[in-house]
Amino acid sequence: METDRLIDALVAETAPVRRLPPPRRRLLSWLAVSLPALAMLVAVMGLRHDLALRLAEPRFLTQETAALATALTAALAALYAGIPGTPRWRLTLPLLPFAVWTLSLGQQCWHEWLAFGLSGMSFHPDAECIPGIAMAGLAPALAMLAMIRRGAPFQPRLTVGLATLAAAALGDAALRLFHPIDAGLMVLVWQFGTVLLLALLAALAGRQLLPLRKNL
Image 1 (tube, rainbow, N blue to C red):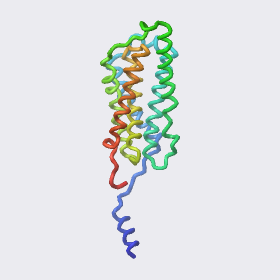
Image 2 (spheres, one colour; image 1 turned 30 degrees about the horizontal axis):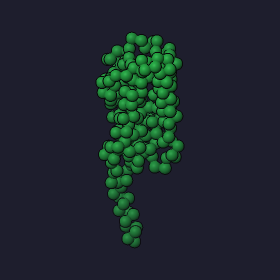
Image 3 (spheres, rainbow, N blue to C red; image 1 turned 90 degrees about the horizontal axis):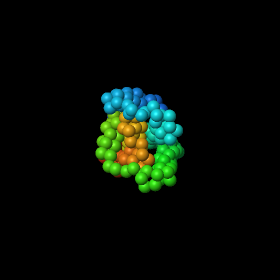
């Protein structure tokens, strides 16, 4: 009888839970918030004057496509991470586009080294990259944070790291539409490096950003 009373009490006190939409549908909602915000930012900053020429370059297109694919797959993986029982392979979705992005930048640096030597390895401080990517990724990051906080925070560091990778990669793809820096080493260190740094710092703060709720 005590067990029956306990069950009845738990049922009476339990609030109804609204089931989350599937991750792919939530991904579309994230894009519906993020893309207009980025489009507005690019419009305010103004497209770079040589964008048409850059879009005709296979390497630039590869890097932009890989950055966008990394953003989409990382966002999807972050949303899947909040679902108990999610297969591990779903959390590794960003690995392939991230590897393509990394290899493309590394190949560009190598080719510039072979073609121009040290003189071709242009490198100098670029103070606009870190705040630029942070600013571009702000709206996507806030939207993604709101979404992942509705899931189960069983893997807070991984989830927040993936979510930040998604927002930063999307911000970097937008940044290259108005920020005219294309030297391989500069892009690798200041832009790609900023994406990694933001994802790492956010992952380290995952437990604070995505605390375990008492009712889980």
